[in-house]
Figure (cartoon, rainbow, N blue to C red):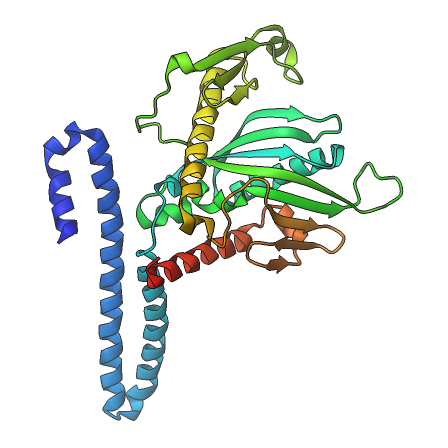
Length: 360
């Protein structure tokens, strides 16, 4: 049995000599343990149902009601356990358990778009609070009226997440489908005539690279610039060259951070964002080469796609990828994203199951 083999290998003191391999074995052992636990629960409930059916067939009137109740409970459990076991067959992205960077950029719509970017940031931060996650603003470029031209936030699950549950507990696994164009329809605060305007923002969700993995960059391919921070932050932050901008010369990808008083910490944060952007670029290139991923009903993550509309006059949110419409926009903007996230994840799972069944 594979689980027993993994347990034995991990118990061997020599296993820790290669930490990369040890982490791989630990991850596989965790996943195998959860699969075995699900299967054992499934077979136990099958046995329970068979016992209840025998009681019902015996014709004992006193036990019949109890037997029928137990059969109904077993059927419900078996249905959910079967679905859970099917889910174990789905391809799992190891990045789903990772923390994530959320990049929000104002698009068409001028100042109203920047204000909507601030609303989206608040929505994600509120959702993170509901999940018990930890968030940190990595960089921001504020607009004149209190919105954001661009803002990057890092969100992590302090409790981590392992095995099959990691995709549920992981930040990236839950928020990965937020990448794309977000359109808002409402009367802007800057509109004197009360007319409804349409504006847009783009959101990019990037998995944070595993710090333990061997992700290396050639220093000769990096240009690191320091400069004086701008905007709010007190006297010190504006009087020293603490802000850091890192450019990856081969790709032209840039990351910067100026929110900390320490140049060293700003450099570390900017490097983390740069690595995430490079990883996301590699992921996008892999998906572009994969025809099956291009047909994914969830979408390819193309930042130019309009994935969702927020219609404030109607109190309506529509996700165009799965034709989901909810008339609870106020609650969603307060961080009640669970129904949307769940629907997107379920749609992806259905598509993956269909692909497995068709052999494509």
